[in-house]
Length: 196
Ligand SMILES: C[S@@+](CC[C@H](N)C(=O)[O-])C[C@H]1O[C@@H](n2cnc3c(N)ncnc32)[C@H](O)[C@@H]1O
Image (cartoon, rainbow, N blue to C red):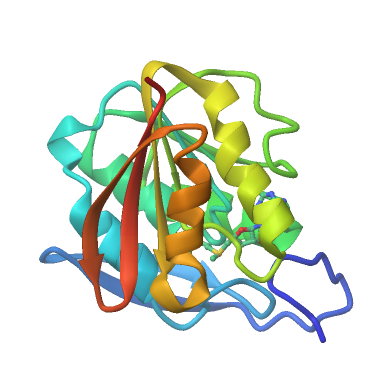
């Protein structure tokens, strides 16, 4: 079975344009077969974006596992932050870069990275709707290794469904971060992990 996080160049392309409405604004995104949630903004990503206060987002932001780019692009459109977006899936990164242009964004870029391997900056905010199907080991690495890429007062924000291990992720991350569950909505936990 193919997963959205694998690179399969044989997977037939069926690129299409979708519209996403978020807080009274409409955004357009190219999506395709083989990328996560290609028909609509994922509910977990939506709850994450609804929970975080755009007015507090400043400086450098990293969207890990950006897919076709909805989280990073919506943040770019609503803040002055400089947004980097990474994913392990080539097709997702090509779409994210196309969507950056489509949405007339100048302060964002998307590039291939397996977790943080091509990331060489420190960030004020690392935000992720992380891949669950990669398994707990990789998932927890994505969450824990974020710490090495945060500025001193930086924060990691992530979303996990309560039926996909939100509680155990909270418990596990508490050994590494100062954790707050800032929202619980539609089965999704929105978790803020601070460095101090
Ligand atoms: C749950 S999806 C979220 C996608 C997008 N942020 C959204 O909201 O639609 C998780 C993403 O993580 C990516 N991913 C999986 N393993 C990864 C890894 N090791 N490093 C970086 N990204 C990864 C997948 O390709 C996928 O696009």
